[in-house]
Length: 215
Image 1 (tube, rainbow, N blue to C red):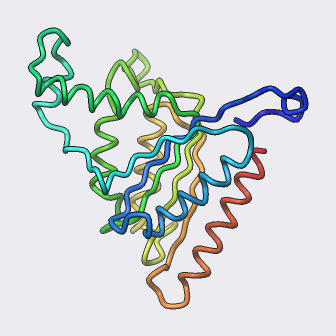
Image 2: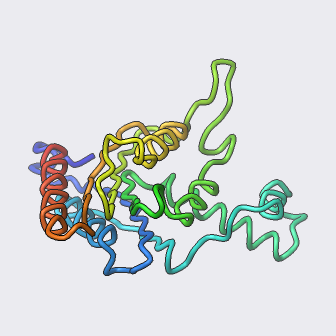
């Protein structure tokens, strides 16, 4: 992902394109948003980076509907103005991800899973023939070669327990569209008294370690 030592020595410019997806209801003050910001800052410290940011809480995507699917399936020259707008939004969400080398995705746990805004983003991203395709051997993801970092913030402690429905769900989805280089950053127990500071410090230490490996 990052330029090699030889490339840096030779002065070659290498741009890493980062897509940052925030989803906290608390905006920039949310713990997942802050960890995302820290992660992007650490990733951007190595070489040249361009960051595209989408805040799903501040500007939530409309839930996928039959009308949206119809708009996507209608040829551009036959779309109404409303369909054109719907299709343009759906295409933009996919184009952001296709253009990215690195995905930094916030996954705060709301009622045992990702926020509905993140699920809506997934529904827009999954498009047959564009981000995945069905073959005789089953589905094949079309977005290979990317790295994903998931910041999972939780009020309680769920990792490795039946109540952690996020990890398998998000991992399965990303694998489905071809993203298999996935790194999880957990900050658990942040609503459990003295656990908060320890959990956040541990999450940042995990980020530091992950980024150092990529250097």
